[in-house]
Image 1 (cartoon, rainbow, N blue to C red):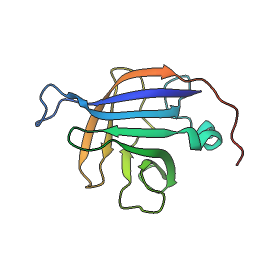
Image 2: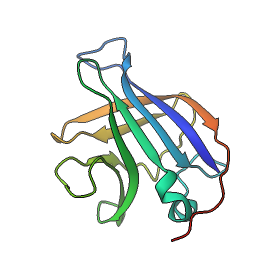
Image 3: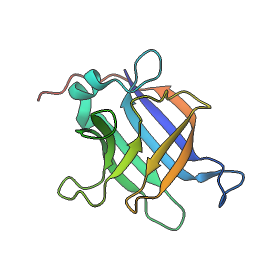
Image 4: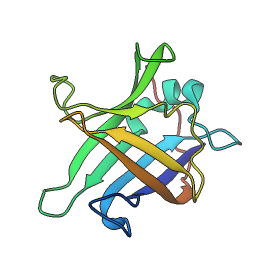
Length: 133
């Protein structure tokens, strides 16, 4: 089932209280335990969208993609431009993390800086008809 996931920047040296103004809104399929569901992602990949919001920058719209390579043989990425790889942001072991409120995930930005985010909300999304490949 597709879910709307909201991530806010977690506490860090630069943001001791964290920051709800820095984050992501992700639409992605989750299994019953809150993990990304790769099988459903294959069926609904065009609906797996990401919005990055950051003060002083325009919102960035992208897609959640799953690519070969990485520590576990595959990596979940945020792709903002399908024609460029230099703008992609990698999730650090996103396939292993649970997307439930209170949990933490790490995303590496296009400048290769790691940022930790807290999952602050997860809501079920309406399930549209299946995509045709």
